[in-house]
Amino acid sequence: MTEDPTAAIERELFLRQFTPVPPPKEVARVISRAMREVDLAAGTVLFETGEPARDLYFIVEGEVQLVGETSTVFRRGAIVGIIDANSQRPYTRKAVALSNVHLLILPYSEWLDVLEDFPGFFAVTRDTMGELLHREISALAPGGGFPPPPPLNADSAPLSLSVLGRLLALREVQIFSTASVQALIELAERSHTLSVLAGEGVAPVGGLFGKLLVVLNGEITARRDGPPMVSASFGKHQLVLGAAAFGASVNEYRLTATRDSVLMSLAVEDLDDVAEDHFDLVRSFLRATALERETFLARMVADFRQR
Image (cartoon, rainbow, N blue to C red; front, side, top):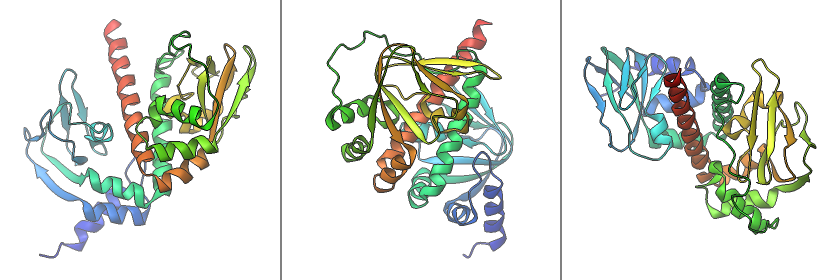
């Protein structure tokens, strides 16, 4: 049975108006063809806790609630299930329709295919995710919702700045932790290192544009004068600013070495070049960003309960 072309066009238009990352026409067309539309009555279970996270649920109309230790309500324009899918784990909470809902369901494998086939769209998606994460963590100013740096004496092993040493360091950084060895070798070869003394500036405001900095040793403080003012420190094997380093707000920070430090610098364009040949790098980014956002949300809940 041939699908009504009007329905396909309506899906495409919905996706092109979709936030936070409206896909371009060609991408929206590919996604819409892989989707199926469903209407569910209030009380219908979309998925249970522990089921494999195989699908993404785009809400066109209605409300869906994730039920677990904490409960969250999603409305039109939200994607339900994406944090679990990106984290490469089963669904961690049950999803129930609070009202009659109209949904577009996309197999997660199809979403990954789109990101692989359209690397430019992935780059825009990644940068937007980084900026949205930054907006959220800024809500916990002045310290922000960034994870704390590890103890300064966590590891006294000698520091190796060879390609192998940089590869091993990248493996310890959450955003690269599940990437393939070949991808990490290429990243390590394209990176370079720099040493800074305590109190020295690492990058002025705007100096981080197009660059990622990983702390190999020491500690770096990133400060934004605001509003709101945010100041956070990053230590060994942490990406300075985490996934937020991909967002536009990275240009509002200046970096200073809190202690004598050694950093690894990597150009974002080099990261994109490697990712085109090694999609596992994209998967690693998606996983790390989802886990980072989940950690932030847990902090928000804890902060709210302490008030």
